[in-house]
Amino acid sequence: MTVPYRIERIEARILDIPTIRPHKLSFGAISRQSPVIVQLWLADGASGFGEAATIGGPSWNEESPESIKHAIDAYLAPVLIGQDGRLFGAALARMDAACKGNAFAKSAVEMALIDAVARSLHLPAWQLLGGKRHQSLPLAWTLASGDVARDLEEAQLRLQQRRHRLFKMKIGARTPEQDVAHVTQIARGLAGQATLTVDVNQAWDGHTARRHLPALIDAGVTLIEQPVAKWNVAALKTLAATLGDRAAIMADETVCTPQDAHQLAREQASQVFSLKVAKHGGLLRTREVAAVAEAADIAWYGGTMLETSIGSAASAHVFSTLGPRHFGCELFGPQLLVDDIVTARMEIKDFELQLPDGPGFGVEVDLAQLERFDRARTGLTATHIDLGRKSGTPA
Image 1 (cartoon, helix red, strand yellow):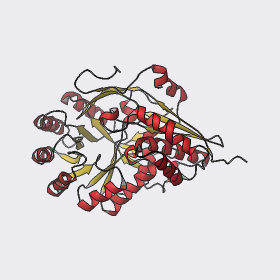
Image 2: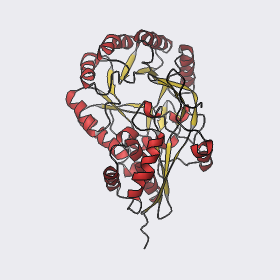
Image 3: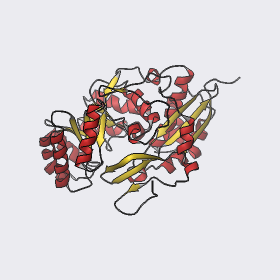
Image 4: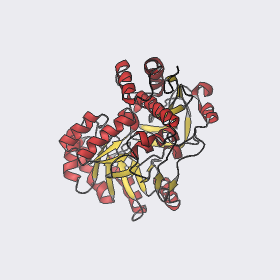
């Protein structure tokens, strides 16, 4: 007899989708995104989709699109085929036993599994993740063109469209003095209209952060993301203690596992955790990190790896189940891409992302778009990131 929820097949593919403009970070600029899309089939015919996206491939993280696909094909999929798909925790344990680390790859597979089971049950995924506590979340937009005039033009357009009034600025690629001047000009242009965040992407050491962050706060910045290297918990702790009354310090790369979250909470080294499903290793483990935050009176922020609508919707489902202390989310990845791979994106209304209701993750994949951007068809070979020199494959 066929078991309805038996996992029958898992397939992974790499897509290459250009961005609407270069997206500049402290370590370079990307002009296309290369997500790994996973499709998983159950014995009853239901299928689900998952996604793992990196920003700049291995320039940001140990995993690349190529390594993610290989881990899924060679190690993760084989240990799940034939298993009962309803046993999410058991699936994670089997993947952990087969392959250490590789959080992004495991996240994409778990995501596809939860989507498939939810669709088989005709339920939104949030019902399998603890139940919805939010109907919508404030949605941020990242100003990362590197040009003040263009950033202000982008911001004003999104304010007029009532899509975003929370803006993040990516800094760290230039000198601290240049970054402070850049942020200050944008802050003046948006005074009284928006909330401002900066993401230093680990570019500064502790001394540089202590010296220059006060000027950013004076300019109007209220949230500061990962100003120092991910290992430098001592510097984060100092910054949280000295600047925490004026602006919140947010950990990103420093907080991946529940154990990381526990250490940061014990050291009182940040007031906010940036939650990203891929870096935590899946939706269930995102909830574990969020549970540590809630227990320690630490707020959360819904981060992005610039996913398509598949990964963004999955993140939205788990974010919808979390506690009330939050700084919104930044699931704007689909808007940064020239096109998407779903028939309709999640709705943005009155500056907030409307969290979907399903079935599954509540978005329907356009198979023709998957084929259009599939690397196997396009022939591209690597994620393009401009590191300030000739590198990568042109987008």
